[in-house]
Length: 335
Ligand code: FAD
Image 1 (spheres, rainbow, N blue to C red):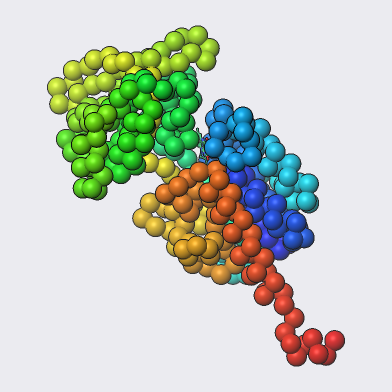
Image 2 (image 1 turned 120 degrees about the horizontal axis):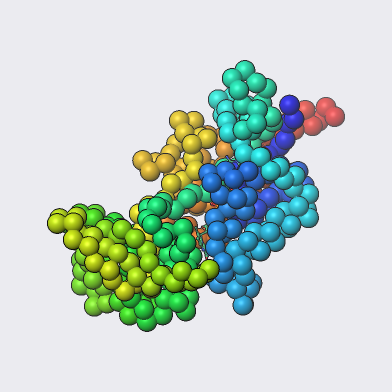
């Protein structure tokens, strides 16, 4: 069993920003990047996208994979130890905190590592619907993030669709209306779940149409490799009638699942499973445990906000560790 001052769990922009700061502060962080943790490659959500155009510093944009490879190199450059394993069990009931990897977590097994502080940066996953055609047209017309992808040329002046009936769906639809020729929101039920104010704004928006009692059943498009989606099959939930509509973009706004199972019941999470942090900080409900990135952010969910919160987590951790290892004044005098 090995002991570290600080372990970072996760491998997205939050985790790597924390790693850069902590390694530059000579705290020898260890980062578990995961081995297809939650179904996503090490590097996190950005490894599943092509161009990232809104991360500052890259005027021509940068591929999501390349951006994450760069972050990983930067973490390593300052001495972060990166381990390509998934943390499957975490015991926060006593200090030092204990953790096990998925290869060795049988009951009674020794923990793989202990740590004085842990940063949870395990991210979140956008929910998918597993529609026929979804796999083929994912990122070729289908997206789970209007803010990230809405401005790309394939959506300009084209009919776009949003699936969902909550505040996110309303917000995404009105955002997309800046780019598309029209935005149709498909709502399974006969009413929106969105707050009154958002629902009113959406219904009054001149470029947004809300189709109640309607679901998407298939994504259709160019069958060539990397071909784009062009149509959507939709179905009425009332009479089962189907039709094919022209659609060049499909945005899912059906929620995210924060990857917080590791800490469930050990630190405070909200009713959707997001880790609760003290506003403006990375402090969780348990001293020595910090959180950053999408696992604690249900509002912004961007690479840059995750990176920013990773910086906050590193600085909060640094302060915590310096206080933990501070030699008390009387003892100092004796030395
Ligand atoms: P994540 O990126 O969520 O990564 C966390 C990773 O940690 C996991 O994926 C996994 O690999 C690892 N992990 C999880 N659990 C464990 C464990 N138990 N042990 C070890 N490792 C673990 N944002 C933008 O700003 N611009 C964009 O253009 C943009 N495009 C996007 C396109 C797509 C398709 C998606 C899905 C998201 C996009 N985003 C974009 C959002 C952005 O990717 C996220 O906000 C950001 O990646 C969140 O970072 P994070 O640090 O929370 O970690």
